[in-house]
Image (tube, rainbow, N blue to C red; front, side, top):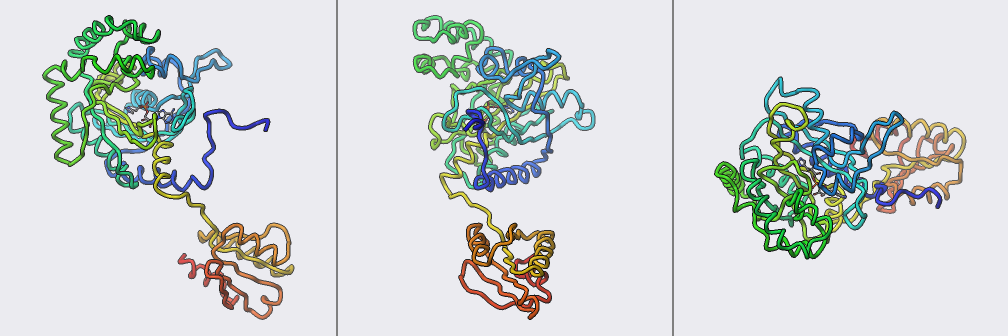
Length: 419
Ligand code: HAM
């Protein structure tokens, strides 16, 4: 095929769509109850927005962005994540002037040029939530509980919440120095990228997928042993809130996340059912990002759920369901065809899914089409039936049929379908 879809960019076909809709509806309902409002930002932004926010040394910025120059030579990038765009919109539109706490959610596609594999795509979708204006552990707990509630709501329970703290500009530099010193003694085991990172941004070594680098980080020092008192208190207070709300979690000392903007609380929700791509959601606090991008010094925390991965988890539990028409109207003869065309359109307006034959084939062929579509019921009307005022309504599931009055057929069909 000459124009097959691009590698890593997939079609979401109708039999998958029901799961996507359920996930989206679940998130919308839940997030609104937590006070989050929808924001829709553009898919394209200036490249600098992402490189400054996410960090030059990250895999996302150094290898994975879809960046290009537009016709006027401006550097643009297809968003690899939503946080930078939401922060940009927050700074640009200043909603905080009305009320200090601002909570936003968004749903949409992201783009990263990664090697496609199970659970990893080049265009993928995230449900994203961002909370601005509070620096305390209560908002951390609020966000984490909301993320966990979403999984509960859609029926996914075998997940684990991994928690870590990345400290703050007071304590992180001490840890960074210590980690650098540790890595200096392990240079023979580090990949060329990590050799560079060990100097420029040693925390990124924790993210590396090369096996020998993974071995190095097993015995690396942990940031949790370097937290300053304020970070320590913040982190233990968050844990108290989570325990109080009976949210189980594990401390994961090596969880640094693949983006540079985080400080203090970071978390990831992981599953054992998706192989290497085990994170179904991830997030954390990013108190310095609004200021870094030219806005006021406002704290924030957020997370994103990877929709493809959640859908894959749902599919391990249930089969896909294809929607089927409520009714098919099979007609025979010119008058019956015109009349039933009108009925089809009227019933559709009341919300019933009604199908008909778009050609003018015989009854047998129309019944076959109704069967292929999986229509629940078929109304059969010919010119003779129209004259006698009595049609046939066939229940395709039960396999039986009854005679029906055609006089008030639209109303009675609406009643049958409960509309
Ligand atoms: P992230 O960890 O890069 O964080 O992505 C969040 C989630 O998106 C991952 O846990 C995963 O489920 C999904 N995901 C990431 N890359 C792919 C991919 N190539 N294919 C399929 N799914 C993928 C962020 O993006 C942050 N912006 C989250 C955040 C929001 N932090 C604060 N606010």
